[in-house]
Amino acid sequence: MACRVGKLISEPVSSLDSDTDILTASRFMADNNLGSLVVMDKQQVSGLFTERDLLVRVVGAGQEPAALKLSDVCTKNLVSVHYDSSCANAIKLMRSNKCRRLLIYKNDELQGLVNISDVAHALADHSSGKNMLVNFVGGVTLVVVLMVIGVLISHFPDMLQLAGHTMD
Image (cartoon, rainbow, N blue to C red; front, side, top):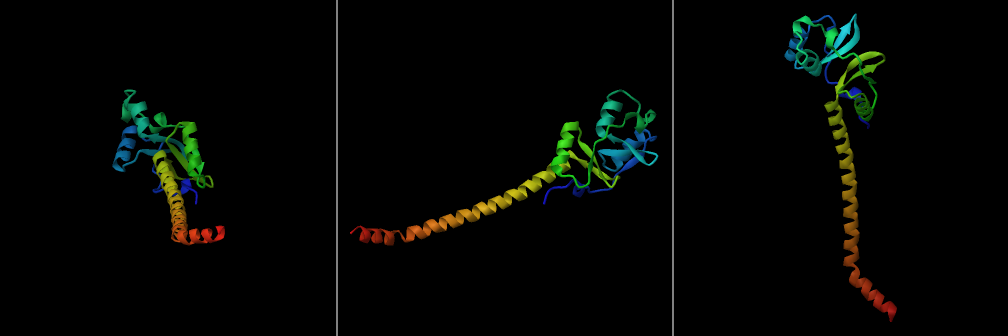
């Protein structure tokens, strides 16, 4: 069965309101061991705030975290994928959009987030399952070939004797 992104969602979406200050949001992320959170405005997704946003747009830019709101620095050009999309399609979307996270929707409702490492691990696991099947089939084929060779070798003297009688 093909790898599907919806199956990779492991926890509920963490979100904060777009008016939340960066210091509060950063503490929330640290307390909950989050690398990102969804930014909401009037119960609609308005952005995604990531560790990278914090580093580049706040700390690296010399901004004061308590003075900025999530809406000031969050990523707003979001890339999403349907719940039933393949993992391979998700990787293609991430590569073409140069992003590490995708929002997953089902029936126009946000279901969760998936990041590039989750998808890569799922693809690797899926691929190793295929490789195990190929290795099994290859192993069975090798055993059958060796058995045929063994039978031929065990009957080789009889075949030589029969060939000798035929040539006489």
